[in-house]
Length: 127
Image 1 (cartoon, rainbow, N blue to C red):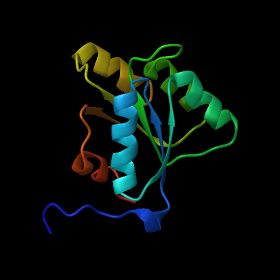
Image 2 (image 1 turned 45 degrees about the vertical axis):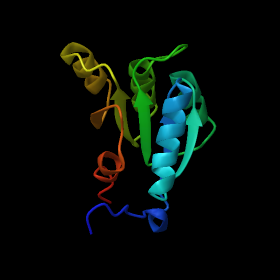
Image 3 (image 1 turned 60 degrees about the vertical axis):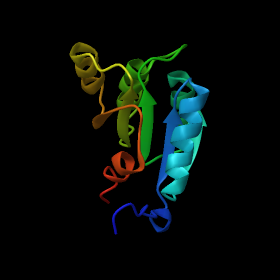
Image 4 (image 1 turned 90 degrees about the vertical axis):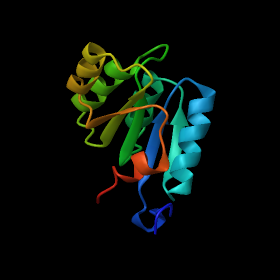
């Protein structure tokens, strides 16, 4: 049915939102909640790396590109070097081709321009 929000709660998927902007954090958290996906939120790339070092695992990481302390490109490279195989979606309002290419080469699975929507997120969960 058109407009229906899929519920992925039975899949027990977990996601990590990595963004320094409080509005984006809340928006992405709520979108994932509406899809039935458990999710955690951190404020920068260093916190994303630290969470994984502590033993947590995620099926999806929504990674902002520009953040203080450690940006999304640096964090994605480190996570991939650590052997993290989660799907990593780069999300940003900046979509210049060179930046997008650098972000993808860091180890993204795909790139999404903000704002994220239910349909954009749901399309990535073909498990």
